[in-house]
Length: 305
Image 1 (cartoon, one colour):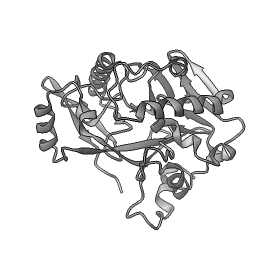
Image 2 (image 1 turned 30 degrees about the vertical axis):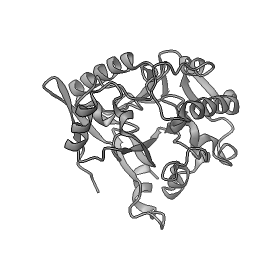
Image 3 (image 1 turned 90 degrees about the vertical axis):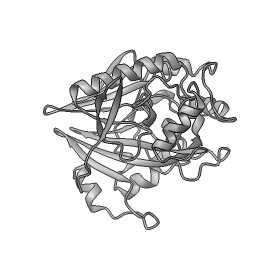
Image 4 (image 1 turned 60 degrees about the horizontal axis):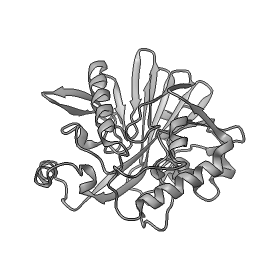
């Protein structure tokens, strides 16, 4: 059964108004976007190098609150040939951070009929806790296949041995939580890691590509089949980045390089017209990029339901 059929036939969890998943196909590749919940953060995290008045005006224009902004957390399940691939693994559960609306991935995969034991590969865009934490939830490792492959850039693993937060601007407690989660993840899953330098073909039509910027090993995942394409951009692109691609996100370890990566990627996507999904764009995060003067424009996909 395809991911699309699964998403249409499994009933939603009782305490959810609507299923937090959305299915589409890229050629012969099945794609399912799954919400891991939302992560409320101070709005200054969207652009710590911006004039506060300009940032406030952008929030007003978007009808968003000034104090805290709910960041979507999107994870993608891909089925290509005989492989079932998880792109990132969500936040998991960190009781010290008190984020009750996030960390929903495991139960939402279950609600969608996705068996953790059927996942053959996991591709990590990077090792921030909202991308690896789901693998550290109690009982998850025991449900995974013994031959599971976790693909991540070698530069990312190396970075987290001694991470540099010099240029990041994060709320109190987050640097320690990020460091602890990445260290624990590397210790628990070291034997499963498949490291790559610049690119790795994970499955037919599924390629991981290191971009750097957000973190030194940050990667995007490109899907291509039957003349159709989709890029999962991880944390290379945020909602504010279309209007202000030069604004620095608080979680970027190299903000200048992250901005260069973002602009380069947005230009490429606008040129190809391919579909885009990113971790923190509003669920289901599927759309395209258009050039709008000196900036860019987000063109959300029309939902097919």
